[in-house]
Length: 95
Length: 499
Image (cartoon, rainbow over all chains, first blue to last red; front, side):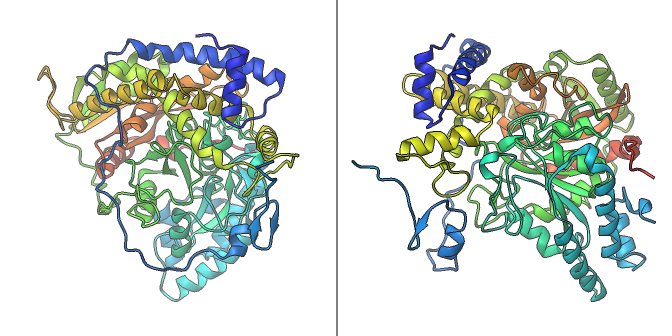
């Protein structure tokens, strides 16, 4: 399995991950060799085997919909890089 | 006096505190001094919290005087820095969270606080718990107390090294693919990975949510039982925590394993074991037999596929979990002209190379056109691995009918002893192989405890005891029976600060 530079670029954008050219080249080679190792899975016979959904089956977990104390706005925003009037501030997403 | 207070068990410390032969302040100061003396070499802690510890110790003494002490009142604890603490920076070993003070405590942290435990510091970890050596920490590498030129294992290497070096009585780590058991093995202490759902994960910074479990790191099985009892149980804040009763794990340590059926999985002995590791494990099996257990060779044929399965599932889940680090809500932010550029730059600057590698791998495995070939295929092979454990434990019928159920499965924890710092850090696959024997239990969701079983060239060797889901009491009973008849957990590393 050999990844191309274009594939690495595409996946990095999907992951919202900025990469330097050097990082991109290194990842192309490293991911290719990891995927080679992973490809041995294809040899396993999994016909009629369901994919694992959960390892420890739990009944649906429900709770009463009651009002309870929660974090204050100040606590929630304490770590936010940019805030204004009790909101998180971001760059415009529409032109 | 100070040195005499290092390397106490919980039962010993509890006795001294409750009889008022020592105070919690004295016990805490002894551990803070120990940290001062050895941690410049071991480098177990990202953040030391001496002032918090002293304040907690004064309160613990008040509580002891009032006759209201519980098991952990006054006991020094090291917390892996992926566990949220509302009063202390919680970094997950990452630049992206280096100034992050969480608005709340993890449930395991609040349970220990309520008991009056003493928090001496936040311990080093591979970034977001992704690694097997602590070399992926954004801050520094922790050193193995038995040989400072070697890794302590990871990702919980900080908590584990702190406990092994006498800097805390117990520690908490977390596992996704062996991150408590593998370092516990490398540093010669006891490490437990519990059944998926046994311990609440509320406030544990998420890595791979179908695998993550918090786990105790201790110097004895009895301490492990105490710590598990303090933190196990259902939590309304974690809907994946299991509503199962929490037994008295300490009382389960009877020392009696007569008639126990011990499965020995042949595949685990065919995965490139260092000769001394195999010898120590075989000798431990012989000892279990001499204590009345029956050894039964079993086969878990898909074990060799656990590593590739893990390196699809864990990165896939990580790529989704780590999407929250976007430079907007909290954590490092590198503001740019557009929101997209802010995402790209904040994550470029904030994440280290292993985290980027796994985000890329996981995103690729989940991307359109590859999802079935990688992610779904891996989840199917995961089913095979889990089914083989169920059959081995006699929970489901075996197609051949040749295998009767075993009570526990015993195997080495890691193929090798601790490797040198730098030895594997340039080769991701070689690093991943350090977890080849621990990962199957994580994929199957079953509990496993690692316990020291000898030394090779003065480095600890470890075996693991796996059991069916929620059989923590059983695997701890076996580990305790083994520990009573050996003295490996009585040995401590020689460090410069040791008196």
